[in-house]
Length: 86
Image 1: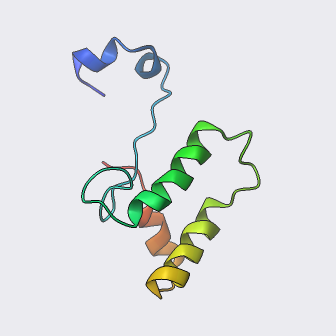
Image 2: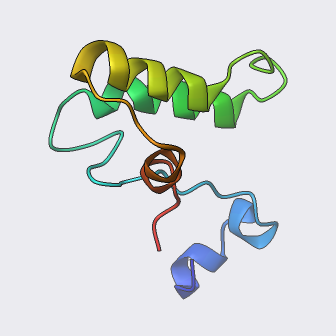
């Protein structure tokens, strides 16, 4: 965001930039995997907050991990997983 090239964009000027979580892997790009399913929930929640008021992203992520990965995420792990990259 500090790059002069990025500073020209209106979304950067007004602070409307969402950095996708990438802990431990990206929710959008490589390597391909289950994270991309979670990335769709994250993205729709960010892009359409008024239309996804009933979408509890934290609950969805915890449910996904429990159901498909047989792992119960703690609140701390969930926070780390969905954190913005540094």
